[in-house]
Image 1 (spheres, rainbow, N blue to C red):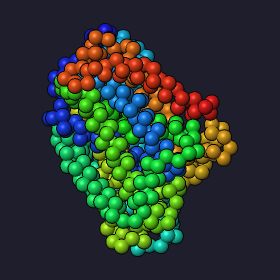
Image 2: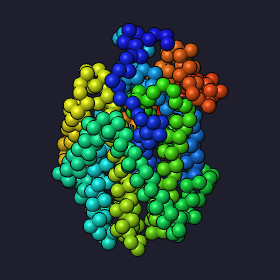
Image 3: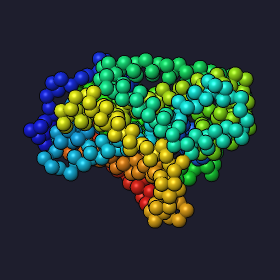
Image 4: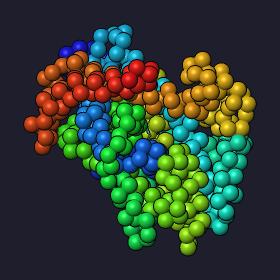
Length: 469
Ligand code: PHE
């Protein structure tokens, strides 16, 4: 491959590998399916009015996200290295491209720090549901969320529990940790989701939910909605920060990359849509509004569960589902950092997992305290007003989410797309794409999407972020 430096697509040596293609698909789907699908997708579908938003999102996945996913996995598999090493393998020493790899590792660290706080909420809610949360009045449930949000100790506690689970699994290794955990957790997740879906399909409100999610109504589409759909396609498919790249680096050479990526993106999208069809019927039949924003799952849904026969049970099942989905994602976030420490500094896995995990735990402290401390909440918000405008400031948690989702992931995704499309030698790229693939014919379409469609799409997201579009 052109530019392969001395460090080269190096000695796979003792690098661990997935035991099968299915193991990879489960782990990658586990990374992709998370809070993004079950918490965020339904609420942004709600605030954007459904229908058209969902359609645009599907187009974004096919035209922008899927080509990037193929590029990420391809680069990881070819280099057999985590992000920084993978960029180094195909560029000159000291090349600025390495920055894209570093950005990815940093993004993994940043996202995990606040993602784990929200993941902690799901555990808290599962626990509350088991204790009969279902029986509370609407007002009490609103208060419960407000109290949780404003309670630093409780947030820290669940954040720490979630990080401990994540560290434990990642420390056990690719095979005995990540692979084994996702092999058990993913079927559990799909099973729970199907049970909830069957229940929803038999209840009232399902028809309205179907119409809300898939019905195209005129005048519904806004430019902001289009860009939100595009941005979300990165987050939900774990793209732009080397998670797929790192998982790809544990693949052996000859697997059908395109078929695998289509399977992962298809499963991820299916889960998002199913989550909508579980949540909206419950919301509609309780007479609640779909467009309430982030509180949809943590406030509206528990209120609706409270009005349902057997609601406590269904609520517990739902929040456990959410926790499992989040866990298979936090594993992949930590794995990026751990794999980086192992490849670049020859650190042993356990030590890397513990070190990186504890550092993330610390970085997450301000996020866990955003609702309850003046320092990281209201006070911090005021500090950021020069950036976002008066009254528009963000607390620590929102600021990290904004930076990661709106800047780091799209920038990383763009970097990976351009690198693979323009820098990695043509012949080698073509071979890697076609190896064992039933979709070899799509090679040029893929390159064209990476070269032209991806930059145009991501460019539009940036122009929107700085207020030009
Ligand atoms: N895809 C995950 C979700 O939808 C989040 C994630 C982003 C995980 C980036 C890994 C890397 O919840």
